Length: 470
Image 1 (cartoon, rainbow, N blue to C red):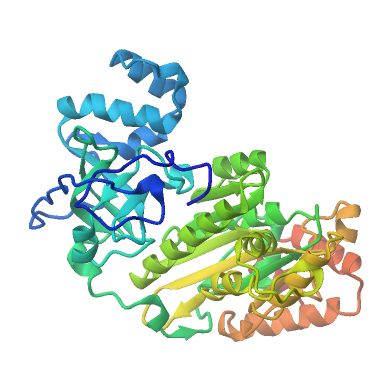
Image 2: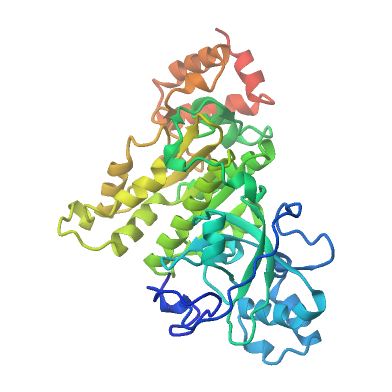
């Protein structure tokens, strides 16, 4: 749990049987209380926390603006509205409305704590602990074999006297499937990894040059592990945004997650408003422990979805900052590499990046991450060297192109995808090889200018490749 972000040290959950003492006092049930009684599971499962019968939906309240919540709270005559945080306000509204509205439905990603119980965290709050989290009892976790990262939706009840959290009483769906189906999944580490076989199309409109160039020269497949290698201020975040828009437009079946680590708050807002997908962030003013917790929750959620044969894409900005955060929080081993990097610090970010794979049994996890170079920090160079070669796709951005105001600033000769013949049809691949031979002798500036000029004269890539004389 991130320090300074919990519900307050020493307070109690009081929503389960007397458990052994937790390592995290902020969420420790300190005294015996009634465990939430589970509703029968023989009813037809609901797909997500939908408000089909006019019942109260926790997810709908989380999507409302703070001004709208304040208005509802005043209508319900809740005292002290002005001094409350959004999560506290939602908690009070739910408490006030629970008796009138009857059933409450909620959905969240479970975080299982060491003592056996867990809480449903909300992606709207970047999985930050809050007063409107939903308590999940140890018996429910054992019954449905729940693990950290499972998306659980179901019926909840408000806290009784002396309790602090809402409690889950009926599970409707696990990872958007009936609970019975969730028991048949294979653990992520036991699934068979393969090279990417199915292409993710990035080409959308005529003017989307980023998508068109990447489709030809650095194609992305389902299960790709890609690095965008970038000096500062070369358009890496805009490139991620372009990739996100292309995936949302061309592949609505893909579950898209944008993970922003150590980024500026205004960039987070811009990404949330422009990208159709889940945007999870931990800004630069958050502690390193918070960066690590957010990243762990996101990768665990993605793994659980892949176990259910879903295609997931994570766009990470940036893996360098994530590695820096891990370097801060890991216990010192006594072995320090050049640049001040602990020898054990990069193991967990490598495990994060290495989770990207195409699965033989069905499903895939694609991770496209940005890596910073030429920042003036020796640590950043060491981190990049450790990740160099671990991916199977690399896009290099060049500062000289940005200085000439050329976007996308892709260094064509340095960028490429391993085993791209598995993604591109043979006839198209032959023409792309000819294109690379033409561009190879040119400088990065000349090659991208020539390519952009030719692309601007054609409506799509198929027309451009057909126009090339063999």
